[in-house]
Image (spheres, rainbow, N blue to C red):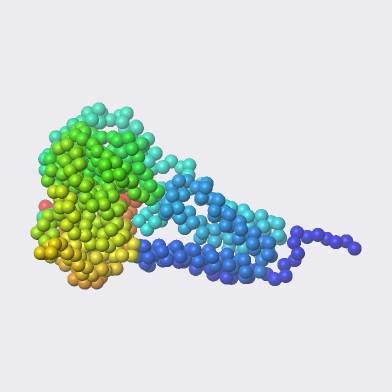
Length: 580
């Protein structure tokens, strides 16, 4: 009798596919929908758990309920585990280090899950050998494709911006452009000293009060009739710095290759006036390369703080170095995950920055004058406020909020609220403090007072209705306006209850025109918008695309000119003034 050998025995029962299909559909729905329906950190957490449990559900289905041959079931599970463990060794640094090393798994698990279920459905009628070969190829390709990618940073909701690993980066394109510009630009514009004024129109981070509030200015809100007029746009090196401005000079910080720059440009033409270079480079997989802080202007000097900890005092007219210090070395501090972000604060004859503690330097000599209490990492900046009649420097840090005396750094008070602080504290009209940490903690109102027994702090309320993360918020007419995740929101300062929520702007930034109850919003996508700063309802008045690309830098207003930038370009627009 002739025996005919086959590749595998005839399958007794068909594959049970529906549990895998259901699991992968639910997994992808949770991954996509949860961040849209839930605030920032909560949505990402739900999506992450959905991915994990969806992936486990598919493994359990395939191993125990799929009816596949035993060897096929367990070889697939082992191969998936090996591929997920091995691929990170082949990844580009931008993916391998993102999300504390978890970004690859955040994307690979749903891609692998979908690819595997599609393979199971598509190959169900194939014979054993081709089916197994297709299975191996599917698993290796689903994981291995990430070795051919890089990430050009992430958005505020942690979504990666993938590109082919070999494709030219935005920074490489800029450096090529800057090299060409340097060959054709007249030498008078490459190094032209200018007369810097003593007083500054926009002295530094978020304006004169470091609060994003612009009193005494009324703009024309009808942009359909009087649209913003583009004055110029120009490529710029990477970084998250914003602008300081005086007269016709604007100052910012940027990265060009291996050099960190403090740059001065003409407000009128955007032509370069001067730049100062430090041979340092900071990069992280989320924001990319470059400095994060915004320079400060005072008495004809510009003070800059770089992402690696270099503090410079420069002549505002020509960029000449007055003095330079390494604040990181002075405080034995190591750069945090996203670099040093503290924008310098000038108070009297001191310039103050934060590493892992406050440190004040003499404006004239650069010598350290005092060191404040060490309270761990923060991405917030020192803030000068007057609380209960006493001028003090308030800082939000990993430990909570602290107030210190400007003259010598003596600790006045502190309010414990552990977390990651990024935004600035906000002072209410009646003298209380609004503070916030990232994640699910929300916003807290704290009463700070000085009495016979010393300083006291009292939590008045904590609201989960405004979770600004690293997006600025403001207080106006008894209400706070800011971001709850990536959606604009307003809460009542009396009790923290929400008044409204609406409009998706990503991880945007904003300024307040208090005289006309108006917010100027710069979205993460580079759009400028006008939104009413009233508690009745969310109402957007106008919006237009100002610049392209992920935009995290604060907007700046110099007279009637609004300046915006991101890690790729900067632009200036003239706003029509009301009644003008």
